[in-house]
Amino acid sequence: MARITAGVATSHVPAIGAAIDQGKTDSDYWAPVFAGYDFAKDWLRRQKPDVVILVYNDHASAFSLRLVPTFAIGCGTEFAPADEGWGPRPVPPVKGHPDLAWHMTQSVIQDDFDLTVVSEMAVDHGLTVPLSLMFGQPDAWPCRVIPLAVNVVVYPPPSGRRCFMLGRAIRRAVESFDEDLNVQIWGTGGMSHQLQGPRAGLINEEFDRAFLDRLVSDPDGLSRMPHIDYVREAGSEGIELVMWLVMRGALDDEVRELRRFYHVPASNTAVGHLILENP
Ligand code: DHB
Ligand code: FE
Image 1 (cartoon, helix red, strand yellow):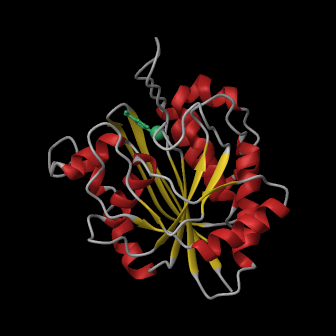
Image 2: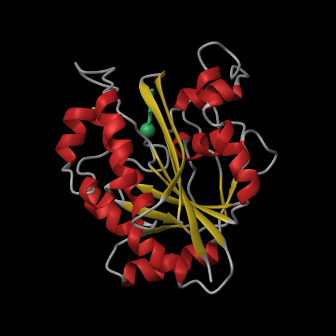
C-alpha cells in the first residue's frame, strides 16, 4: 500500500530560482535563505521518497484566462519547465507518476472533488523552485512528481476549508493505491506578500508566525479562516497559503514538527518552511 509519510511546506519565490540558476546562492543576501534548507536536503537524502505530490499554483504560465481550473492534476509522464519570460529554468524535466495520478483522479473525483486532468503542461517557478530548494541541483530529480495545481491567481480561489478537505481525500486516494510507495505531499507558495497596488511589498510577520503555529497544532481551526482574512492580513498573494492546507489535510491530526524556518525578506516575500511527519 502507498503511504503519505510526511508533508513539506515551502515558499516558491521566483527570485530564488534565479539566484540558483545564476550561481548567487553564496551572496550575503541569499546565503541565509539557502542555509535554511540544508536540513531539508539532508532529511530527503535519508527519506528517499518515491513520489512527491506537489501542490502549487501556476502563475499564468500553463493556464490563463482562457482556462482556469480550480484544481488540476498532472497525469502525464513528463512536465517541462516553463518559459516565464527569460527562457525555461535550466532544471531537469519533472517525471510524473501516471498510474498513481490516475488512481488519485478516480478516487478524489468519486470522493466529490472535481479535478481537471492535465496530460501536458509546462511547470513554472511555483513547482520548480520548491524542487530546487529541497533537492539542490541534480542532473535528474530523484523522485517522481505529481503536479497538483490550485488556482489562487484568478478570483475566486478555493477556500482554505476546501483545500484542507481535498488533502483528506488525497490521503484516502494514496492509501488505496496497491503498490508500496513512500509518498510525500508538499504545499507551496506564500508566505505573506503582495506584488501589486498601493500595498505592494506588504509582509506581516506576526500573521505568518501564527499561521505556522496553527498549521501544526490547529489545522482544522485554521482551515476555517475566510479568504478575505488572508488578503487583508497577508496581502493579495498571501492567499497562496491555502495550498499549505492541502498538504496538512493529508497528514494525521497530530504531527511531528521536524523543521521550521522563517526568513524575511526574499524578493518581495517572507520565506516560510516546515517539515511535518506522521508519527
Ligand atoms: C514573488 C512571486 C511569487 O509568485 C511568489 O509566490 C512569491 C514572491 C516575488 O516576485 O517576490
Ligand atoms: Fe507565487
